[in-house]
Amino acid sequence: MPELPEVETVCRALRRLAMGADVTRIAHLREDYAAAGYELLPRFRPGAIGDVERRGKFFALHLSSGFTLLLHLGMSGRLLMMPSGDPGDGHTHARLELGGGRGSLHLRDPRRFGLFALFENGGLAEYPSWRNLGIDPFAMKPSMLAAMLEGRRKPVKNFLLDQRFIAGLGNIYADESLHRAKIHPGREAGSLGPAEIKRLCRGIREVLNAAIESGGTSTSDYRKLDGTLGSFQNVLRVYKRHGLPCPRCGTEVARTVFSARGTHFCPKCQV
DNA sequence: ATGATTTCCTGTAGGC
DNA sequence: TGCCTACAGGAAATCA
Image (cartoon, rainbow, N blue to C red; front, side, top):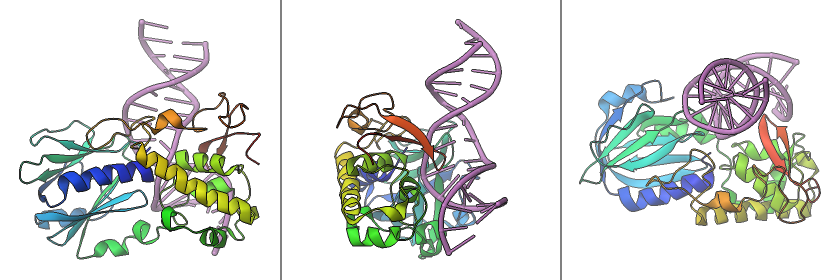
């Protein structure tokens, strides 16, 4: 499922291929696939893509005409660069036509947990799930993580999934980060000591960087902008590897459930 | 206020 | 082989 590294991968490709291009037309093929801004569509005015911003797992495309397009891939969403004129399929919920023969951006999302929303004149800043996003994991210092963990009783796995604290981690990278930091996912968040907090901070940063280098994790639906697969699924250490040996100590990776999410960890080296 | 649970949705894996 | 059920999960809503 697309998390920070997947969104960042697509974002970088988008900057390369679409920045400066005009979004000439929005084909909104499924009107219930928008949590905000549907009423603005009739007023939409074409504009050049000036900046492609990523915060957490969101993309924001800022257009010169004053509109901002906000996208989230949910769990089965793909953003694909397609040739102009390609209609997409039954799961293609929106198409952004680009000027200058640059093609068309398709938002395809079978399970429809994603988001396509339109804002005008900075209205995005008021959008709750954007406004309430937590800190960027790359800018997170151990002291900042410590302050957020302080007094929290919930399992650290649940904490890592909450976008209001740290923006961009999902199930895959939460599990992988905890394994790198040698912390058991069920540990009470507020119980982590300074050394553990430091390891977690570093583990998060390192796994996200490595995954971006690999173009993201294609375990199921995720694809890059050009439709090809990322490769980080080949080097995962615990996620979906239950029953296989921990790459660090050889113990069988275990699986349990936290926060209604499958959680994978090494029962020996994560304490 | 905090944390836990439920809901949305559909393709796919697993069981019989 | 084919059918059916259960499961996967991001984030908002709801519940305790």
